[in-house]
Length: 264
Image (tube, rainbow, N blue to C red; front, side, top):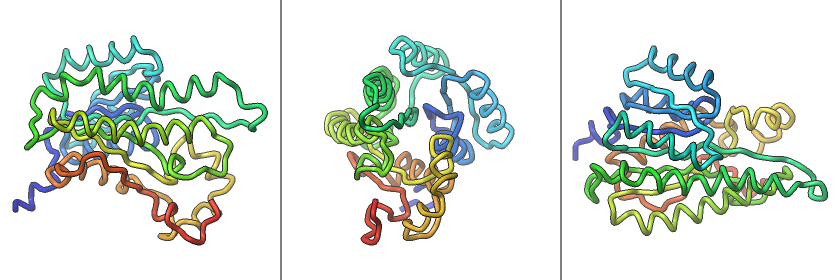
């Protein structure tokens, strides 16, 4: 066993959607720090380029920005076309871009489901499908590429917030992962889901500001997630260490979903 290369992702080509902030930025930072060549995408050109510049200054890997609005199918195809101009293959696809919508049950709008399910679920399939040629270009069953879908603990149990479309989309994403894993594994593509708990992100900011102490009190390890927690899990799934992990759902939540004292 070559332990020194067990978690090595140096030189791998990685695409992280929603990579300009929150969990996506944490994941991109982890891969760049480990020496990978990382492409990040988000709707905001300014934010995307800013993060890419900052990560390039830190190294030792590289980071490049390809802004795109992944809610739109033509933007998905444009993103992949831009990537194909620069790379002949893709080692890791991290489907992280997502949206949420909170509203009371009686007022919850139909457009919320359209928006959230399209980005969180449908476009994960669309982008993975569009990246198929890049993902299989160098992949074999003994040296596979990796698709990592960022789900949520809210897809495992009903959340206390009234985010109906979000929790439904993440539960659907978890099942989509299993379906894709069974199909794409034979093509040398591993597909797994990470279900994060509470992390310091823009999406979680209002909730953490209002209920941070309560949330932390329900986490057995006594804290919210850190960049190392989520990035480390992605690196494991993308390295030799994770080459026999396929179709898995890994909770990275400090034990919230198994806390027998939790009321959520």
